[in-house]
Structure formats: structure tokens, C-alpha cells
Length: 101
Image (cartoon, rainbow, N blue to C red; front, side, top):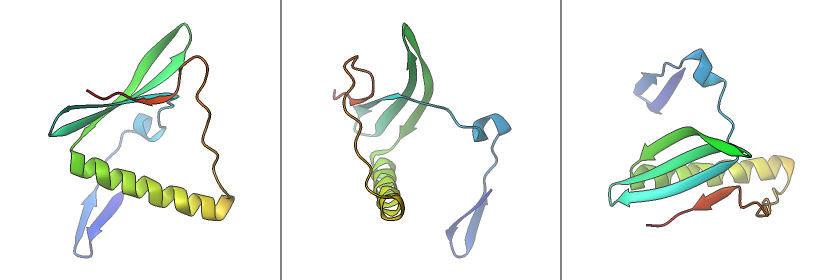
């Protein structure tokens, strides 16, 4: 893959085949440990247990840019395919949650 950051700058990105397959997650936890970082933990929960699928650590500024990119992509998706209904909170308390420290 090649990403263009600015018209004059391109960065080649290498990815392992296994990483390109992606990882399924049905629960996420967001933590901020210090002023300098957010931690996004993605889990796959299949009772009676769960497993951490991926952990992403990023700066507050990059997190804010990611949120903006996600909002933009959701808006484009909804414009093309229709409104996305937010999933209800499951009774088992599985799902995406925010934990504040």
C-alpha cells in the first residue's frame, strides 16, 4: 500500500497477510491513563470467556482526528446506504463501553 500524506510525500506501508484479514471485535473499552495517551482495547467476547483482539494506543490529537475520520465515513456511508441505527445495549452488558479514570 502507498499512502499520500501531502502532494509531495508518499509513505509505503507494509502489512503482513494475517493483519490484512482483520480482527473481529464485539466489545471495546476506552481508557486514558495520562494526559498523553488513550488506550483502545478491542475484545471478542464469546461466553463464557473473552479475548483481547487488539490494543491501540494513541495520542489525544490523533484520537480526535480518528474520530473525525470515522464521523466523515459514517456520514458518507449513510448518504449512500441509509441511516445506521445504533445497536441497543445488550442485556448481558457486552458491547462497546467507555471507562473513565
